[in-house]
Length: 331
Ligand code: ADP
Image (cartoon, rainbow, N blue to C red; front, side, top):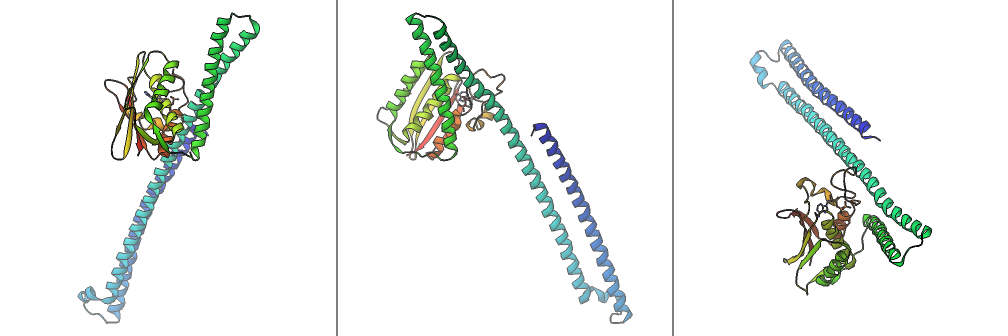
């Protein structure tokens, strides 16, 4: 269903609920007035009957008359009941508005994410496939020197790896939807990060990665999960940084957690977006204007894996610029 149609339906629902609220107030008011009229009429009837059969002679005696007192009690409790019912109904209607609004906002967000996802995934799939096709066509049509064959083959392998990463990320995200069976073990943090660093530096230029941690730290985690977390965060740090990319990785600890922070000097993340970036398919900005490649799955995967470790992840601003992602892994 289109957002416009949804919007119309939402406003129609609001209009109906508003009408119901006004009707409720009106009918409650009318009921209270009618209740009062009925009460006054009954009092008059009691008074006339009692005066006629002379069981009461003086008006003043009515103040303590048992029938009038019980009628008054009944009237008061009926009045309270009407007001109580009206308040409950009004609250129910307001809760209805809140639910409609929430569902609407969720729908808009999902529609936006699906559109972003479709656009980005199409691009991410199309561009490596086109390059590989072009390389293969060149191979079949032209006789190339050995050096050129190497160069083109390297490019084709890189593109294939990109495709493989994308498919792996999609599969992992689908797997994380259900349950991710983590296999906890003591992992040596330094060699793990050092291996990732070497791998990333071999593929990226203008990147410096500082590992500020002891060589003998052991953390409790799923090794493959940890690798996926660090690769995603470090690759983002590179992707969302300017020309000269400097990344600092640090380890600290407290009683309950091993705390690993990854700081970059990149474009930074606006405060309003800090919570959103961990949602599935969420990418800051608009797919039509964005220049960086991606699917919005990386940080979703990171967050899911950390949650399955019963840990948490936070993001803050780095000084003077950039972001710091901090991972808390339970000991
Ligand atoms: P992707 O990188 O594929 O778009 P991610 O889930 O990895 O998806 O990240 C979600 C969004 O968070 C990114 O689109 C980007 O806008 C923002 N982001 C992530 N890491 C950083 C970072 N280090 N600096 C600035 N923005 C970032």
